[in-house]
Length: 205
Image 1 (cartoon, rainbow, N blue to C red):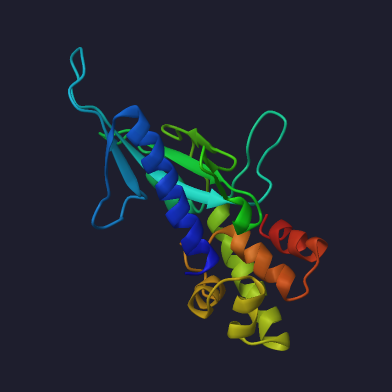
Image 2: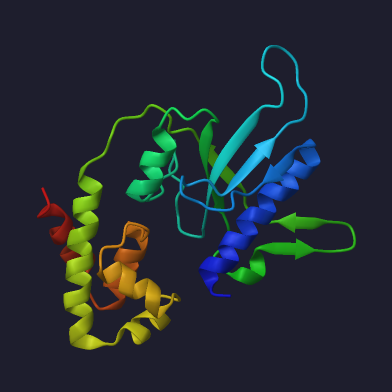
């Protein structure tokens, strides 16, 4: 598995562990068209609503997302739009934060099994539309392709950013599933400065 697949599997395991301790069941949609990775189900309940459910979009990152009063995470437009709708089953975004080194993710001894760091969640239901994100991603994609073609192959770039060649191809073609975080990391790997990346974003208006 590559690093992103490992992060995905760890985030799923994290939710499974929390749900198991709380006594809840989990389910996974066979097809993920609505930015739903996992669902949590509670059996029975009280009041007018029985067997309540909650659906989750999972993200896992080792980047610095913590600020003094909030967390910051670059969410792609499709996920944003899928999570903000008034769905019948409520949806939340869950961001699992892990250490930079994989060897620090888990600590296991005879007395404990420790998953390092934690997860943060937020409901985006009802928040306003965002329009500029798609334009910014397309501008970064075009700039990335132009820069990369001058200095390296897609395979070489994929190795530098610990990703895959198909993922780099998607990034250069403006695929909606590619995050701004990946685009910026790829731009930096081609030699672009933060000032140059900022100029590309600023020109979008």
